Image (cartoon, rainbow, N blue to C red; front, side, top):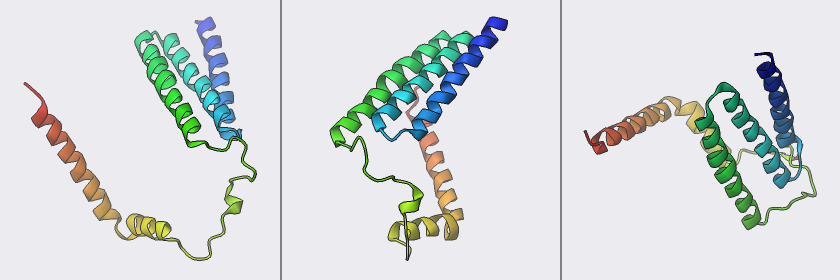
Length: 136
């Protein structure tokens, strides 16, 4: 029991450092590799819990497929590896609202209730489609 707690602490510390690395790095490929560390740590935590199947699904689906897809997306879009300027909030200077901001303000302020009702109706339609398509 004590060895499991020590292993949990070490894995959790590695995951926390990896998560900080994802957020702090300027290179998107390095961010993807730090994300591999975090997702691998989650798989190790599942193994500590005795859920080997979930750990393998974590490795195969998230690390194997999602990270590879993420890296292919980075390579195919030819994203700059080292941006010349920092992309923080201090670079944004809005003098008047852009159309995208106006749309989000109207959806989440003026039309919030109809937006939520539409979401619930779409969810009900999705559940109904699953029920109708299911074979008994």
